[in-house]
Length: 371
Ligand SMILES: [Zn+2]
Image (cartoon, rainbow, N blue to C red; front, side, top):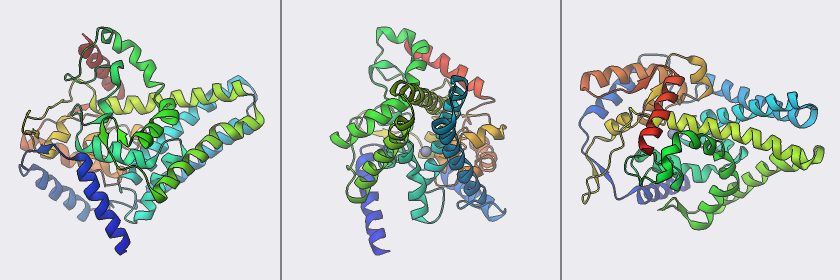
């Protein structure tokens, strides 16, 4: 236990080190009131913040679906019209594992027991990306600095696109609302073959330093890569030709890449989201942290329980950003409290009524940033 506390303290100080240099304005009282109301919601209902039975059921359904579809694809499918839908389905289920199981585990939102969270977060290593690198990139950098260019690495797509007003505009960005969709499809492939290895070798995520994985985390990093490449390539190659394996992998990975990219973009890279910048020399964001999270984030399809299930509650990104360590199955209930509190405090609560409305807004934002 002492060991765990010590390593937790070390982790927290390292997280502060990676996330330092930028401060938020003083808490306006909004965040404390919101927290109080959400605590009250849990006290006065049967809801549980973590270890929710429906989350364990969901985990079993998703993992069984993953291995079931994979087995059908590798051992039974014989024709292209069997292979193509199975690849697309496998891509969707893989994304759902990322959205639900690993994401909750990584945020300590899955369980109150830390090894359960660790185990669930490692489902990301199974599907081809390092849970350790994800923790730093997502839990620390993205969540602390949502939509602040130069700090939130999810906004950085190199020269290929201009997602934020503070990014430099290049001539060819005028077509980004057409071609970026193709690049979204390559996200998972880049992740599988390049991103984690680059972060490991350079000790950087984007231009931010982070502590490289050591000891057990390094073993999980390489163990995860070994398991993923065995599942994705070694086993299929025992039964199929190289081009069949590459084509099938490509289809699964492109489906996965599009799903991951689109869900992220709909939450933060749309017309309704703010892209604040720090006050130059003071390195201060002139906003309460909680209000910053709300103004930089947009929900969609709040009333569609199928979308909520499949996307691990990431259509409720406002609530996720405010309460990342509460299990996502609770977001619909929490969202009512957040929306009401926002109204009282005069904070704008951003949302799209449907997935398609969000997608259209993302398209228009890309067009506006490119011209
Ligand atoms: Zn998150």
